[in-house]
Amino acid sequence: MQNMKKRMDKFAHVIEIIGGIGILIMTLTVLLQVIMRYVFNSPLTWTEELARYLFIYLTFIGGGLLVYQRGHLFVEVIFNNLPDKVRKGIQIFIDAIVCGFSVYLLISAKTLMGIASGSYSTAMHIPMEYISFSVLLGAVLIILFSVCNIYEDLKNLKKDKEGSQ
Image (cartoon, rainbow, N blue to C red; front, side, top):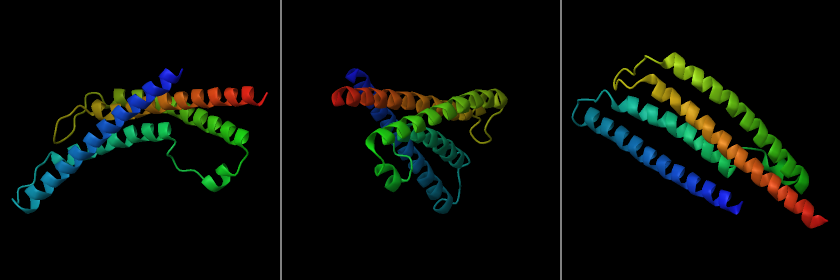
């Protein structure tokens, strides 16, 4: 099962690289827009739209990674002062709630893609269901990483229980 953890780490690393490339493209796109607007006095119509859609994708990809890395905000002062078993139980409960919410988000994203079908973005003429797909992708990543975290926590809880006997 250690193999699963290694695979998830590699997968998370690939997503980090994709996110980094997305941030680079978004930054270059905005820089190009600034140069075209203020230096050449001829703004491009598509750059703002591309930057916006990249930002949407990066938000949902980043949300999935934060779930995996447990990087979301919480009150550390209270959480870290709880007994170890209680802390682990609360973490599993939180991950289960996040996973449940993400299942709802996944269903809603699928509905949103159906609603957006046939619509196109103004400047780039991208089908809007591709943009709506970012929500679905983020939900899938959050579910996947939540389940992985729950599995690891239960495995560690079982190992701790066996070690104390």
